[in-house]
Length: 257
Ligand SMILES: Nc1ncnc2c1ncn2[C@@H]1O[C@H](COP(=O)(O)OP(=O)(O)OP(=O)(O)O)[C@@H](O)[C@H]1O
Image 1: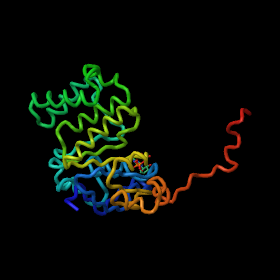
Image 2: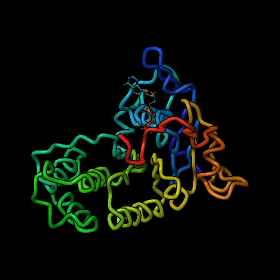
Image 3: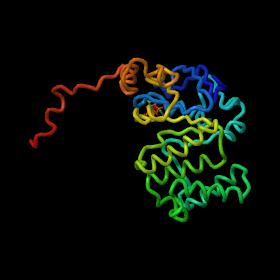
Image 4: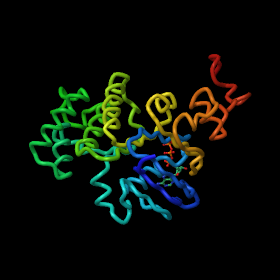
């Protein structure tokens, strides 16, 4: 295995009585497409927030691209791109202006920002909407412009929280193409998702979280084990069975009021 893109040791986060992340250790290899999966409330967003320097852990350490996230945040932030959950963007800028702003903030020269922005807008099929204000973008368009802003400075590691949510199949295919090209060049993508088929078809490496802990992690085939699909392996790992509603909800359906 090559060098680690992300190294997490003894990471904890509590919110009052609620333990969101319960002492996880994790090593994610560089140059891979890594999927972080887990049921609702498993702690995925909390983990990604701590790994990207957005949320301070109660305990533990995180290293990204060889730098400590909390001791050397500037070095880490220069090397990563983030598409967070509930992405907040400067809505009164146009898509093109948002990319110019992000690129300049990252220290790129104006002409280089223009060149990269034009290519990204084109590849992500946003060229026609580049002068429209972001506030008027659809959910999928917001994801795509957020992704463009996260990629513009060519980060070593890209973190994406549910990148395909609200994205149509054509755009999803486009995003996939961009990300595959990006990882093929040795960069790392870490993304969270609930969609197992997507993770199974995209990722080389998977980490399964449940109740704040890592239940399994490793190459996709290893985590899938003897199960026919990742979905099945996932359900076994997190100890979840589709809940039988039995006689609950007996009022639902049938037209009776
Ligand atoms: N700011 C917060 N204050 C209080 N509790 C929080 C906060 N953020 C997260 N939690 C709790 O921590 C746990 C983990 O939440 P988190 O959002 O990390 O899960 P997740 O795996 O990303 O879930 P989902 O798939 O539903 O987005 C949950 O029980 C959640 O209620």
